[in-house]
Image (cartoon, rainbow, N blue to C red; front, side):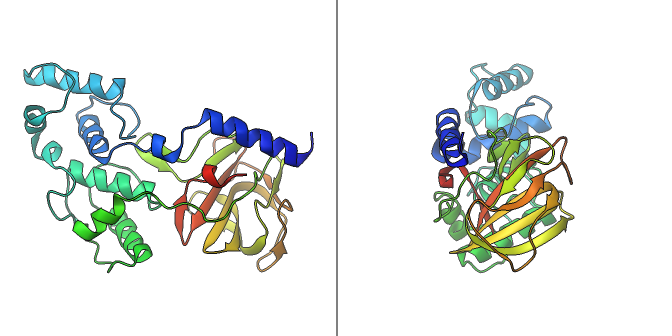
Length: 286
C-alpha cells in the first residue's frame, strides 16, 4: 500500500479509536481528589481527572473507613474528613513553592495538559512544579513569578493549545500510547511501536534544529522546526540521518526506530510542540 494511502488509513483508525482532547481531558478537581486518595493507598488508577468507577470505588472505601455515608460522592463532609490536603480546591488560595494539597495536584494537572508537565502529579509544589509554572507563565505572557493566582488560573482553564500546522504520520505504524495522563505522570506525545530500524520520516517540511543524544530520557533525538513556532520531535532513535541546519522535505527519511533513552522496547515517540509547549499531535495529523 502506498505511504500516503496507508497514513490516511491510520489517521481514520486513530480518529475512531481515540477520544478528542475535549473528551479526554478530565477535571482538575477530580485529579486533585485522585491524588489525595492515592496518598492514602485507596486509589491506584491513572490521575486522569475522570470520575470513573475506580475513583468512585476509592471514595466509597474512604467513606467506610471514616464512618461516613457510603455514596461514592466526595461532598463537603467527605472532603472535610480527607483532611487539610484533600480539602484544598483550586483557586481557594495563591499557590507557590512549598504548598501542598489537592489544589496543587490540580495545578500540576492543568499545567501538564497545557504542555508543561512537572513530573509526578503528587500535590507538592516543589522545584519542578515551580519551573513548569514559570515556563508556562512566560509562554502566556504573564509575569513569571511562580505564583498561581487568579490570572494564571484563568488562562489554565482555557482550551489547551493546538498546532496551527498539519503534520503527516512519521512512520508506518499504529498509535498506542497517546498524549495525556499515564499513571501519576503525563505523556507528552504519541508512541508508534515498530521494528528496530524502521524508517522514520519528517512529518512536515522544515529545518533540522537539533540532532543527538538527549539526557532527559528521549535517547537519540531529532528536532525539526517548521515555522509558526511549531516543532516536531522524534525520540528513542537508533540512527539519525540528518544534520543540524539541514532543510528536509515532508516524508524524507530522518532516522530509524530504536529503543534509546527511557524506552522498554523499539518504538518512535513523536511530539508536536508550539513555542515550547507540548500539544496533542493527533488533531494535527493528516
